[in-house]
Image 1 (cartoon, rainbow, N blue to C red):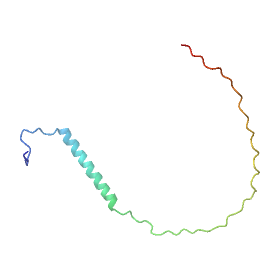
Image 2 (image 1 turned 135 degrees about the vertical axis):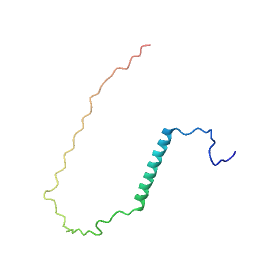
Image 3 (image 1 turned 180 degrees about the vertical axis):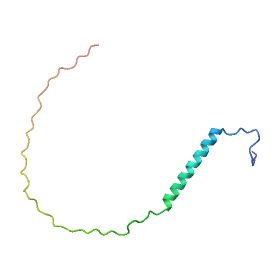
Length: 91
């Protein structure tokens, strides 16, 4: 196979719409790459270096009311027995 520096004269050219799509795709890929490079290599601005928040530690208060008494158990009722006849298969 011969390696040529330029395509042959009779080689068909790429369609104009495909060239436009490739150019748009290249521009979008370059813009995305530049944006990602910028996001990875830039430091966010430091707005506040140190913030002091005063905090008062307060002793936990006891409950005002005693806990409620336990609820009596709910009796479980057995479901009624249902007697179904066996299915009849007609052939």
